[in-house]
Image (cartoon, rainbow, N blue to C red; front, side, top):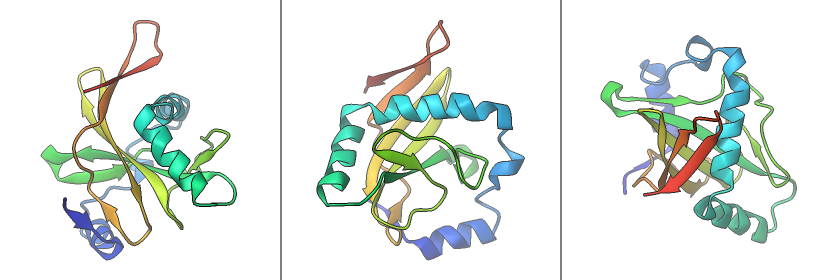
Length: 149
């Protein structure tokens, strides 16, 4: 598995390979993105990682970082536009930067939704993601529905 440390991510940002959220995401999309994250946080693999963080004695809600991978453009971008996304649940909070071990979600767009990978990572040990763990799509009713691959 390829590992990418924080300095490499900063190098990507400095060279323009990581785009600013403000230029890509409209504010009215934040609620739908939060629903997407909440759906993925209910998945068994994600719940297992979240339980592991809680078992390690972390105080307060665990941190969750969400990226969108666009391999055809060689780009990795944050899902949320704001500096402090107001998305979370009883045991987690979505953040823009992690300061402790956290759950990291990687989404890759596909027709009608995303395939996703989820990993546990430390601030100085982020990866570019690995194998897809599942897929999530919008149902006809407009809600996010996930499935394993």
